[in-house]
Length: 173
Image (cartoon, rainbow, N blue to C red):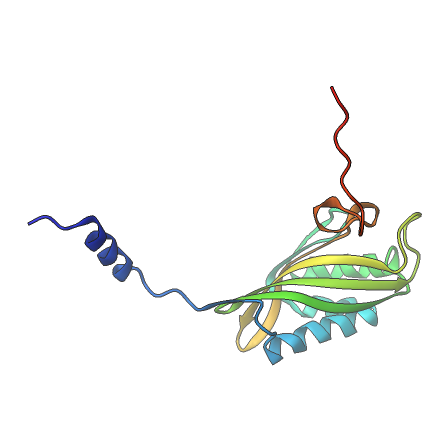
């Protein structure tokens, strides 16, 4: 007796263990919102130790200058250095634009508005950064696993377009 292709696919799907529920654009769970606000407060206070403590032990951070930090100790040191130099006197405000929940992981798109300090020449004021954040719930608390903040070039938004600007046609060859 031949098993139809559909029946074979169905039996394969039934053999795969159930995947955790996936929610896109879900609201932030209160405990994750708490972690985001703790980061905002620690960053605003320029307290590198408090910022570092919010990261998972295996956490990673790459700042907009491309400097890598792996693990809480290196992340704390990187923030300490950044707070003493490029971020000295900077204040911040975080807005979570999107969250995707997958079990004990959350992927967040975060807008960080920075004011004060000494931005690089030509940088817009306030500076607006975008951060991609992967968080993991461990022992009932959310920790930052991977954080990647960056700035759009010349104030351009997603897709390389400045607000209200139209793309120019490439020059003829």
